[in-house]
Length: 439
Image (tube, rainbow, N blue to C red; front, top):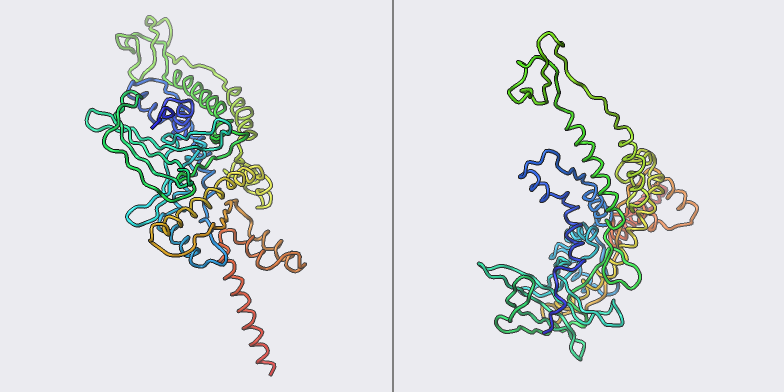
């Protein structure tokens, strides 16, 4: 099998590593700095961490709503698949890495008679494309390098269709050394998944043109993060350098190196020449602070798709919910655009999970492509919303059911239907009671 496309040293992999370091606030580098006992370490502010976490909070704070119409067996199976695979938690966690890496990979498979859904780190994913269409996949390979003792190996899983359109799972282990794939070990395993679509599903954060890979949320922000960290580190170094007091005075005040016991330099003078005094320094850092606040922060606000108001860093965060919604319009557009990729992927993932159950004889029903509802977790002012919805309902420009949906974005379609029916039943009971009293 041709595995020449497997390469862990690509620009894509370098980018994943760089963005993951940013998300982790350069923890590994800070450990190295501490071990070397550098006096003025690089200070990395955790803005990249907060941006990725905020995306996940906005995109997947509420459980997904996946349902089918006129197919109760498939509808029940979908609910079970979501619960059994803890899919809501997977989505919330994967959304974080998707934001900073730009890509996520989901895998459908069977395990001990169960239809399973899991995620695969995109750095282990190697697709082959059509030479004329960079979004048309010919085959997909997952490759994991690992060590056993002093030897290094490479485990691969390849998924490709046969002439009938059935996708085959092909696994093989190879000797592996310094990025070079050696001879295979043992026999190749081939299994027909019977799926007409690949068990692997790629989800981009956002993308443009004919590019297959997604763009990280960090792409436009990286230079600003770097400049911000550089300026903060520079100011810290200046303050640290001048934090220890320097002193003029009798040589007896200092040690043999003319240094003060508490730190700082001593400048000895003969007794009686000059009374002891500390040397103070005058430094104005206002322009550094203005540059950070008025240039870097404002640029971050313009470039970042996630509004400062959502962090509580804007006057709108103390104002009405309507003002916050208007302020975060671009953030909502970004999340909605990302949800389009998620929605299409989740339809495929849950449909393939149903198919695997049925094709392997675990259950007997007709799989269905589900409807997927995703909700943005934008803070709302419930009083303002209630007043607005009351006017809409009274003016008969909206239905009660639609109003319930907007006032309760966390409710699924089924829960909204149940709430609506409860209201009708309650009103029927009230009408019946009033009618009985009149009699």
